[in-house]
Amino acid sequence: NAEYGNELMLRENCVRASIYHFKFINFLVLMEFLLHVWVLLFVGVNCLTEDELAAFTPRHPDYTDTNTGLNSVVWAKDNNDGSQTIYTNGIPSHETWTFPNNLTRNPNYIEEINTTLNIFSEPIMRDEPLRCLPLGYLGIATSGVVIDSWFPSQQGCPEVMEFEELDICEGHPSPRNQYHYHHYSPCVQMPVCGEPSTIWGVALDGIPIYGPIGEDGVQLTKADLDECGGKYDSSGRYKYHMTVDPPYSMGCFWGEIRSDVGKNARSFTCSCPFDDRVFSNRRPPRQAPGRMGAGRKSNCKFDNSNTSAPAACVDRYDETYDIGYKWEYQERDVALAPCCPQGQDCGDSCKTENGIKDICVQETKTVPYWTRVAKSYDDDTEMNSAENENMIVGTNDINNGLGPDVSIFGRNVSKGGMNDSNVVANENSVVLVSEVSNGGMNDSNDGMNDSNGGINMGTNDIGVGIPSNNCSFTCRNNLYLIGICFLCMLIAQIIH
Image (cartoon, rainbow, N blue to C red; front, side, top):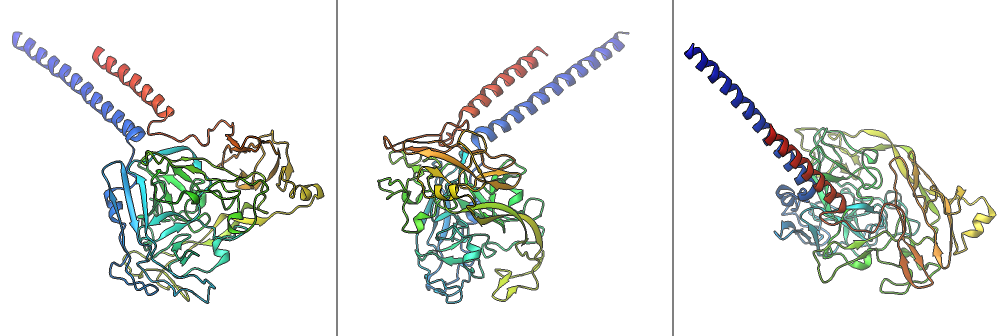
């Protein structure tokens, strides 16, 4: 009996030890989970990993550009101080057409233009995206070529595909003689059919840009992405993606921009698709003197005393100006980016001067295509108001500036379409409310008060213009909540 009792006691102790062991494992699993949550919320993921930094290298290191006789230089590094740097001399490391080009009527040359981009090592996401994109380049491709928006430097903000044919690598030189892309270039990376795209470049806000093929091996279009042209991957990391339909790359910026980003502050002014006067001799009805020139206001204020701080960037639209166009979604069949079958060698690009190579695969897809449409002014009153600086002109409904359906420059999007409305403004104040439903843009804009020369921020509830810090108010609340949950679970484990 004594031996049997000892055996029962031993078994009971083993069971008790197993229970404690099980609880301890659960406790470790809980700690690991909370650690992952903390990392995602506060530590973040590097804008560019070591492998992604290493991808910034000439596509063909020994290639000599036929336009300049120079070799491409591009590199990226982590500075171990919270910043990363990307440098390029702007010379393409792949084949291009000869410029100036009589076929495309492009009179510009390709020249060496050194560009240094500084980004945060850890992304700082904004509360609201910056929709007024700067003039010139928006990022740098891994090939060393800069990436511009989908608008050429022309009045009326035409789509670049409708304005000029691009070379076999989907690039051309600007009036500054800087060779650049406007949309996806297969010469940066050859897309392989069914394989997820690798890194394609990096944006000014430090968020990586990937090619058009998603994690599931299916090619993405704008309908698969958010308004800025990005999405979160399966690991919770946000990335932009290049697509074959507008805006092709970044439609806005979700990340904060460093004060030492390396781009001229004068370029951070609102242009297409909201304003095109920077490309003409026209001036806004109200002259705004300053370093930016008449009528031009910088969207970003850079901290010269602390260059590692985020620039204070806000969307600033001239509410008194009507560009004469609106953008709406129209169903259109588009040719997806041609891809190279797995295991095949398709060269640098599937595109030739005579079309797509036979070895490459190209599919078509029906997508809601963001299309520029000329505004029509059917009502005489509305037409006359276009010449009145106290009225902002839309095309469909006239509102008094107090309703939720007021929009400016056709940015009120509902169910994939766009509706315009008028907002009444006067010389001393501007009333502007804009709202977007079902996946559109919800933004508050800053009004310009001419009576005192100041700028009054909009009062919508989304707080545009308030830059996010590494630990925003929302993050701090999450931290408190996680801390309380952790303490409660720890006490529960001790009681058990």
